[in-house]
Amino acid sequence: MADPTTFVAGCAGSNIPTQSDTQLHANASLSKAQAAATCAVITLILYAIFIQQDDKTRIPIVNNPLGRLGTAFSRISWAFRSRSILDHGFRKLAGDTYMLARGDTNLIVLPASFIPELNRLPSSLLDSREYHSSSMLGYLTELDIIQKSTHHVKVLMSRVSPALPRLLGGISKRTSASVVRLFPQQTTSWAVVKPLDLIARCVTEGLVLAMYGTPICDDPELVQLVFEHTRDVFTTVMYMSLRRRWGVYSTANLVVGVIADLVAHPDVLEEVREEILEKNQVIDGDWDQAAYNSLDKLDSAMKETSRLAPGSLLVYSRVLQADHTLSNGIQLRKGQFVTISSHTRAMDPVMFENPKEYHGLRYYKGDLQRHRARPFRDIDGDILSWGAGRGACPGRFIANLLGKILLVKLLTEYEFQFLDGQRPPTITLHEFTMFSPMEKIMVKRRKNPC
Image 1 (cartoon, helix red, strand yellow):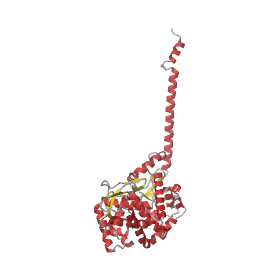
Image 2 (cartoon, helix red, strand yellow):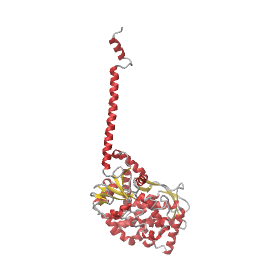
Image 3 (cartoon, helix red, strand yellow):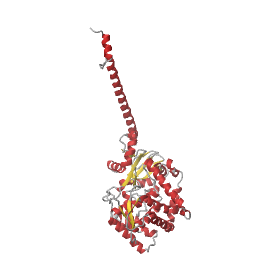
Image 4 (cartoon, helix red, strand yellow):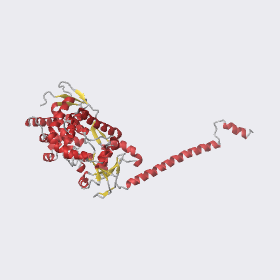
C-alpha cells in the first residue's frame, strides 16, 4: 500500500482538488452571493425610503421609475421625451395635478384652470425670479442678478413698451436695412442660408435701438456685443443643461417657425401674403403700429406656430416661498417648484379641433371677434404663448412688433424653399422647442415684391 503522505503530496501537484480547496471555493462563492444580496437589500431599502419621502406629498410622480436613485434617467428621459412625458402625465392623471421628475429638480404640474387662483396669490409667496435664475443657470451666466433686481422688467414695461409707437419708424428702418444687408439679393437663383442666426442679427438691430437709443445704437461694436452676448448665453445654457434663454433667439425662432410653417402650407402663405400686400397699398407703404396690428391672418399664423411650437412646454413656473394649501387640498411646501403645462393645454382636443394639425388661419376662420380681442401680443388663456399672470413675458409687445416687421418684409420681398422639400422638424430639448440653428433653407429675392 502506498504511503498516504506520498499520495497527498502527489495530488497537490495534480488537478485533483483537495477537500480544503473545495471548501475555499465554496466560501468564496458564498461571500460573493452574500455581497450581492447585501447590495440588493441596501438598494431596496434606499429605494423604499426615497419613495416614502415622495409619497408624503400625496402627489403622483411622472418620469421617476427609480426614485431619487434614477435622477440621471429622469434627466435624460426628460431631455429627449418631454412632450410624450407631459402627454402621459395628462392622460394618467386625467388632467389633474402631478409631480414631474425633471432630473435636476421636481416640479408640481398644475392644471391651467388654477391660473386664476394662482394670480390671486402674492408674489411674496410665488417667486418667478428664483425659478428663472435656476432655469437659466444663473450661477454660470450671471443671470442670477434677476433675483436681486426687477430693473429689466421695469424698463420693458414702463419705458420700452409705451415708447414703441414713437420708436417704430427707427426700428423698422434698422431691421429692414439689416435684412437687405444679410439676406441674398439675387432673384434668379436660390441661395442656401441658416435662417435663425440671420434673423437673430436683424432682431438685435431693433432691440439695440429700443434699449439704448440714439446715437449709441449706431455703434457696430455695441450691436455685435449684444448679439454675441445673447449667443454666448444661449450656447452656455444649451450645452450645460439643454436649455435656452428668451430674448433675441426666442423672437428669431418665432419668425423662422412662422416662415417654415407657411412655406409648408402654400395656400396659407398666399392668403397671408395677399393680406400684407393689400394693406401696403391701402396705407401707401406707411406702416404704423395700427397697420401691423390689423393683419388678422398673419396674427393667426403667428398664434398657430406658437401653439404647436411654443418657446417652452411649461409656463407659469414659480418657487414657493412658504407652505400653502390649494383649493383642491394639495399641500405645497416651501421651496417646491410649481408649473403649468402649456403643451397639454395646446394639445387638448376640447380646446382645439384636431390639435396636432397645423391650421394657420384657425383663429381667423374661427371666432374672428375673439381673435381680434385677444391678438397674439396679449395674454391668451388658451395657448399661453406668453405665460400668464404677473410673470407673463414683459417683452411680448416688442417681440410681437419685431416679429411682424420682419415677417412683413420677408414674406413680401423673398421666396423660401426647403432643401429636400420637407419642413425641417422642430426640435424639443427639455421643455424648450426651437428651430435648429444648424438647419438650412433656400431663399431668393422676389422679382416684383410689391
